[in-house]
Picture 1 (tube, rainbow, N blue to C red):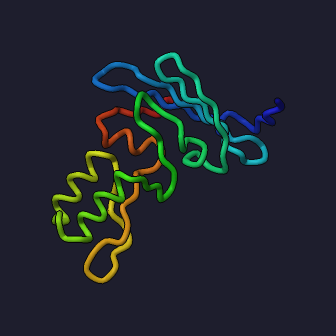
Picture 2 (spheres, rainbow, N blue to C red):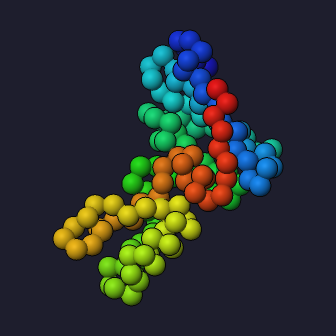
Length: 137
């Protein structure tokens, strides 16, 4: 595969720690045609993916048991919290607490409530779940 390296500034790397233990390394590279290639090395397992952006390329990859999410990602967990909030079975404060535990945030205020609950994108989700993410390059 010809990667068409432009220069070193199109390469980035992050190291991920949990409780001072190195759990993953994430590397990204933008090719000449602006496709983002990433690899995630976590516990000896290596996964590769590509996308139009870093977040898009990371979507669906895992660090330990945490799935990295893309833009405006939802699933049954976010839908359940959102429905409890919309049906007034949870206050906004209670719903935010549950959302924080899964790395999600409320968006799109509509009238008197938020209309959506999305996961934080890419590596940002790891930071709220107790991981330390350090950009090395």
